[in-house]
Structures are given as C-alpha cells and as structure tokens.
Length: 98
Image (tube, rainbow, N blue to C red; front, side, top):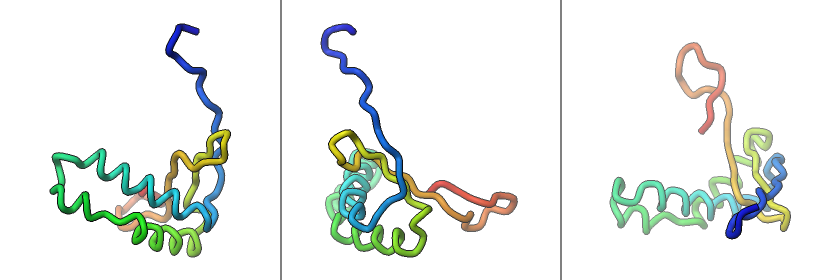
C-alpha cells in the first residue's frame, strides 16, 4: 500500500439503540453544517442543536427502531447513520430514505 494510505476500516451496520441517539444527533448537526454552509444562513446552521436533535432521534428510535441504522467502527463509535421508512406521500412508492 502506498505511503499515506490506510487500509479501509471495517464497519458494522446494526439497528440503532437508544444510546446511539446522542452520537447520531452530533453527526446529524455536523453533516448539516458542513453540507449547507453557504447555502443556508449561518445563524440557522450555528443554531442547530445536537441536544434538540438527540431528543428527536430518541423519539424516532423508540417509535420505529428498525428504521434507523448506524455504522459502528472497530472502536465501537457511531460513524454514520441512515433512516428509512414508509413513504410520506409520493404516489407509487412504498418507502423512502429520509
């Protein structure tokens, strides 16, 4: 392997648990701030709250635990997440990725 490159890390994908809500919320906020910088207003992005998002993710995981998945690295840290479920209104589709 060339210098400066690392072997691809292995990840485990599993259903989210309630104690994953905090790490999911942190990633959620960081992702929005990085992705929408220069598109959405800075005050909005700076005002995003991992604590508020944690409450929201806790509720989602409680209501529909199988709809949220997390990627866990070898150290046991949540490094990614995804959420899907029943389609919220597009005719002809049964599910969607949120």
